Image (cartoon, rainbow, N blue to C red; front, side):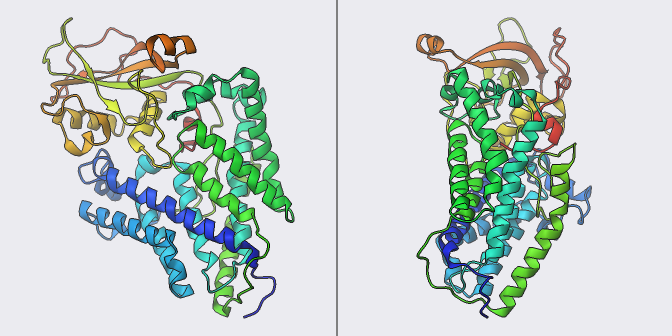
Length: 499
């Protein structure tokens, strides 16, 4: 069927990047799920899926695992996702008929939707919904049998607009430090998981921090409108977003949020001299029109959210995670507090008791360890430990079980950690201490070879053994387990996180 307005071959390159990039992120997401699900949400995990399924309805959280669940089946789903995502990443969608390519993308979306909808707080991050919405959208971009449909290209830009403009609005409406351009004096130090360059970003001159914030406002509040302008303005807008996202990638670890945003930005970039226009089958035109109509209707909720006074930062308005609202860091924490889990072989605590620390893979712990680059991989326990230090509500469903698993020496749980000081003999007691962390100064780094300086605040969870009894009550006023809720944070306001 020849419909002149329906396709535009100048976006063939954009389609290739959108599909290959999204498949690559899917691949990372499924690998992360396969490697971490057993100790987190498996049958004997910290928050088991079977228990979750018993207390939720299929309508609120549709998932293949409502038909059947076992750890073995979950692993099979993950590795099918890995294989399918890998195949699509290298172009398998162009080797099959158009309908088959679309089906491959939709199967991939369904598999990951099934994981997210049973993932509980471990999957309550804005980039999960962003991956699902993007993954569903790219299914309608077609393959080499047809030129890219312009309606789906515009839908990708609309998704990018909501990601960027939503994030800009929540900042403008949120913490005053975004308006006085001072937020980045704190953020590089207090962000959930610093990267290898975050220390250096923090120590940039304060005037440059102000430039960073002003540039962020420009990129998120002004540039998104140019995505819908004629070329080459739209391509320039896409390029600006890519550059600003690369800056964020360099400054911290935010899983695949920044990477997926960059991938979406290619929807605005056209290339002249593209291949000849390939007409679309009638059925495909109908499917794309139906998809477009769905996006238009479902956009009512995120538009109302962005225009409303009480904007929700990351929100899905339907259990399929389609056409969502996005945003990040509406408020910034000024102090970094970290939970440190310690264990000992002693059965009774004395002044001579030696406590040894468990080291996490990504979150700060050892003050001499230089932060690593993890994104786009997602360390889910490390992220929840950051939230737990902010508010006890994030820790209550799983922290006690985590401590029990460490006391038991559970192998799968210990694999989530970078270093287990009790590999051969589990501890008799464990406790959780809360520390105030700050970046070392240049002089402290040279003198002490430490990236962090820390000060003990007090107990978060007093010493406990397998019996569950506290070994010795702490006299600290902060010894309640866990501590009281702190001032409202970005995570507290939204209930969901995004970097």
